[in-house]
Length: 146
Image 1 (cartoon, rainbow, N blue to C red):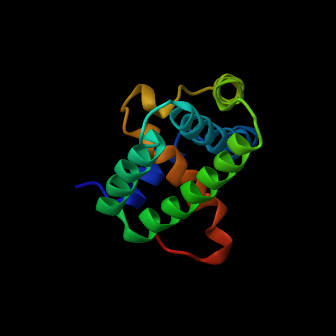
Image 2: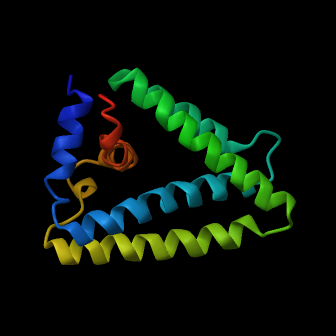
């Protein structure tokens, strides 16, 4: 089984240009936020975003309990913000659509700068590794080992 560090290292291979890295540190959380927003906007008895969070936590827990807990905390913050925005009367569907499109444009612009294709073109699991890579790179100064 591939370890989390091996996944992070493999993802990092196509994210070396400082401009691309900076773009990803902004766009990856925005994409996650927008997906949670889309799912939260669905008129279902259960907020579908919670199902995605649960699946994500299980995915990360197989690799690292610390990463699973960190991603859970991040998602809880995002869901809390979305809850507040929804109850403030904002249209989560429209907001999520705009953020999603702009963030993906940013991602592809970053890869154009990098000169390498996105990792998920090779393996779709990198779509799950991207948020972990972003979180791991943002917490390096805390010396957290994943």
